[in-house]
Image 1 (cartoon, helix red, strand yellow):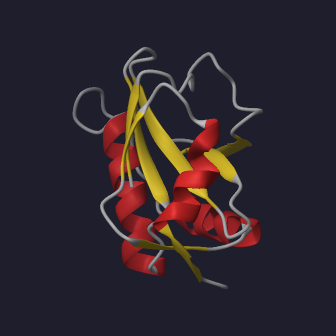
Image 2 (spheres, rainbow, N blue to C red):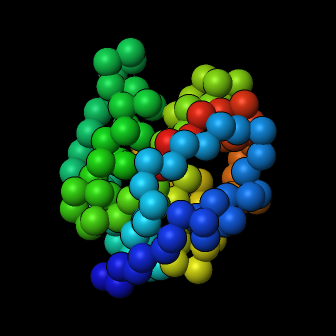
Length: 131
């Protein structure tokens, strides 16, 4: 899998489409992959079964674990954990090497471009996003 470095300023620029959110950047450099690499990550992620348990292992836990999985397994940290307070839901923003932003639902493996995401569960307004 191809892994490339992107500086934080390019990551911030890619995320300019995400407004009305607080974005926290913990690093000065980030690593990511292309869309095919993201699909490979999701395939492996879904291959290791995880079970939803209300209030014990739910959306925020799936999202935290997916973020850590990307870092530990692939060295990819251009993965943002979204805490969407209006929707009362947590999910992932994944920035690829071409600086495209994807919404990832770690519970199901569903993926959308940021602009095509279903706003019903993935509003991404008044959210805290940590990279």
